[in-house]
Image (cartoon, rainbow, N blue to C red; front, side, top):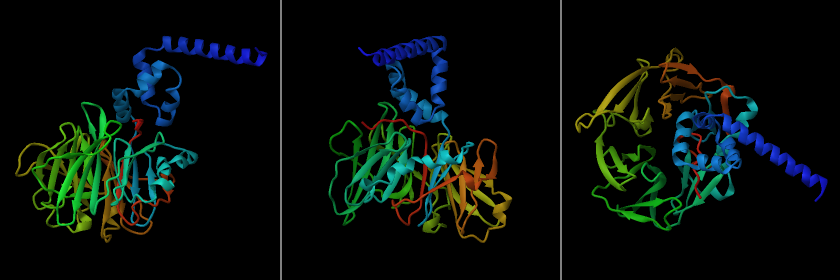
Length: 375
């Protein structure tokens, strides 16, 4: 054996001895708390350190805990423009050049024009039956079985809180009005399984949210909200919209279904004349009016541009609201739900990226750091 080989072995032995000593000196609970604060890229490297680290970082309960503790970032698409990355942390310019959405800008996804996300996973599809599920944070993707059909298709990722697995919901609208719903468990199923339904509903593109194992959809037929249990794989509830909210809205102003602090919510009216936003939070089981209305004051800067016809709004799971006035070179405002205050987001905190998916459509993505494996 060469001297060089012996040197490598000795260095590896020293490293492992130091590693074992350090880990032994740090309480297990503290190790977990430290790992929860690390980005996905770092955690993927730590999985290679030891079997215990691999097991911990692969554990579904750790992954869920990591997502709750890591800062959520907004990814916003504006019509015929670019995607923007918004971070609340103090990041250097070079850090912004590693936008995870860059992974989606590959030739294999070029024909997929629609997008939806849950738990940091991104679902991409088209109306030809092609569909891919991606985790851009760990650079993984899988294509699900393709089913050719003649109609429009809508997909949504849901999370089964019991099995800790992700499932993909599919709604197919065929010519003549026939609707078929199916489900697919990632890394388990080999083919789509049809779901029986006692209701007919047509999902609205980019307007659904998954919370605690239930996917909530905006229904384009009856104009209400339909709840689908990912755990039980069945429809469980229909929820009417806030009274007088939908009928007064134009299509572009359809109330946006969002999550705020673990609750289903709707971003409704923007009252330009009064400088306010209406936020409705689902709270209760009343079939007549199950929503609690909250009014949020817009920042003073908004009042100077109230001639703008529309504001693009979205939230992250923590309830922070991102607002973009629909004007040329708009300012960006972030509402901190904890502090109950607005602040303008500095331009150097925005990362612009050319992107081919969903050209000309409005998409709001709230991608949380995700280390969920697809394989």
